[in-house]
Image 1 (cartoon, rainbow, N blue to C red):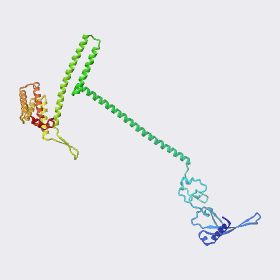
Image 2 (cartoon, helix red, strand yellow):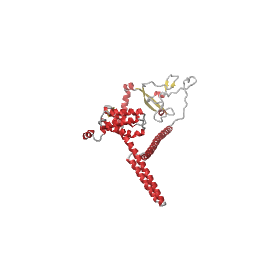
Image 3 (cartoon, rainbow, N blue to C red):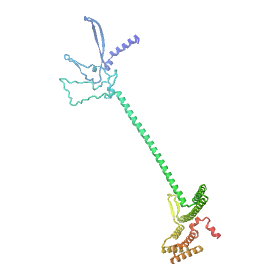
Image 4 (cartoon, rainbow, N blue to C red):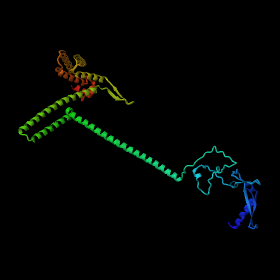
Length: 407
């Protein structure tokens, strides 16, 4: 600022100090003369100083001081006599506050800055005091090192956990693959055993045309192989002729064995077909209920009639029965077919009477086998006729009404 501005500023300051408002707000002021003398005691300079006194609006702390015993004047500590900037230390016990390194600010607490020492005329009670001994100082470098070690420890555990989890997953996957491979091998071995048993069963007990075709093909392969072996051998003509004769005889025996197996298979297939037919006509009617999805079975008059006829037929097939049991079966069959009068029923009744007469005479069972087989076949025709068994109409290839009209 220039000289004019400086003079105006000083005039304003003097006017403010002379005003009564200054004394009410800030306090009061007075002038003091400072005299500077030289070594001889002569006055060299005089200075007039204006001293400003500020009225304190708070309780000044007692920090000790000096009392003039002659005049009785009490001189307080210079810290209490000057205006200090009051700061509140909310974190006075914090590490950052107690180890604060800054030259421009004080880190002394406002409360614990006074110290009282024991002396001859002063007794201090130390009974409730506790002695604290400082431990090893924990610096920020040590703190960072500890944090790094903790971070490395956590990382090591986490990585180990990830590795163990991945290892367990791979181990379980490997175990599952091994179990699946073992199951596949077990299934394949089981299927091979079943297939092998089936192939053996097809050759020992053939049932279908394909089974017999396999037997004929294997027999032809064996015959051609034996003939080629005999012809390529070093035997004489007579020996070859005798060997070929043996092959022919063996082939004939094998063909006869195949024919017997074919007869047995035909009989088994016939019995199986008849049993399937009888079971089909005697089974109850079945349908699903839409309300709850349960299966409902109901026996009708026709299915009941078919079941009774099936029981009679199975009784006629039984062998090695006593005389009374056989006669009971014959009597039940006779009264069943006598409800209708036709050539078939009359023939069945005639056969029943003949067998009953021969049984009463004591004829052996082998001599009655043909008669019983004929009676069994006729009663099967009786069951297959829709006029006597209405349930059999479902299994007729040609409707019974057409056959009846043509006859």
